[in-house]
Image: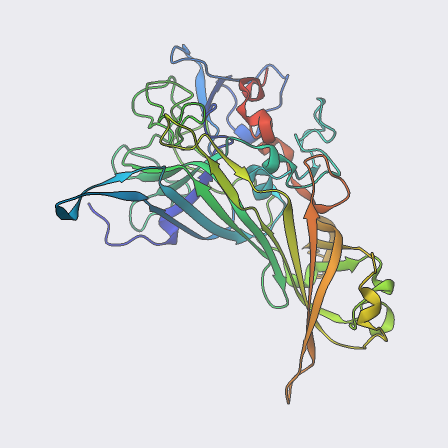
Length: 464
């Protein structure tokens, strides 16, 4: 039966750890919960290299993004008109380049798990079964102390995004997938072009993401079961090959995907909830803000001591504009690279308490930098107040003051908007830009979400 409409209960957003590497893995058939897999325990998983996998079960690496509040997608085909003398109307309109594909979504900030899946370098304090021993410092494939964008800067492959659509009136979560009444919208080679965070009094902290992709497609049948081999029932991934710019087809574990969610081996129900330990949402009253060197602040708003202004909102915006690199012989681009350097914009809105005695002329040659730290805590069930459980922390380092804007009207408090900017250096820069720390359960993204260039390596998807 056809749908009359689609509402939020019937859609869920998923992400794959890459665009052209494995979306399926083979491994032990006794592991029921993909999140409980620990490497080296005899139940490891390995990348599937062909369709002949015997009795081994296949686990999907396509993972749900959590706490999504909106998701919008679009595409446009760029065409060039072909005309000739003697005829007014065009004789053809041909596509000279890859289509423009867009996806934007926002979600509640929680524990950094979404950011980790999106490719941010965000270590976690929650190792679950213990820290992993490998060449990374934190055991979760993220490197502590480095820019949160270091993995995105090094990434030349992107990710595949999937929007699953269930039948009308039916939740996607825990739905049993059939071959005919589900659809999945696939966006291939998706690269983040903008990321922003907003925290304000009276609002749940949110993050917004804009993605640019090379391709988009809709499949009318998806598999949610734990299949014993790759079969034609599993659709092809939406990505194009960034080496030759061609769309990949053919029955292969690298070219196909299934939607399963967390319970990859138990049944054919889709799980969109992720780990049970993920907070439902974080409260604005459980947020702390600090600003280093505030006693030497060059503006007029007092940001330190008894006269400290009262923060009302803070936003961090990281525009990551990208350029598509093309070459002869390929319709699609072979890369979508970040335009460097990256500038981070920080905006603060405050209720003014005291004014500082400063002369803006004296600040023209000042080299003072400021570091901002926004820390989001959980709720203490015993007291109802802020707990000591740090969920996610965002730091902006080496920011410079850009300006202040004051406003006041009858019956209102005087407010000021402060703007700062900082610049992100290379992927190994520790002194400038945005640094993040989270508390997500490490094993839900390990080792299947490698960072940067490692996501293009087959060895990154082997867990033996």
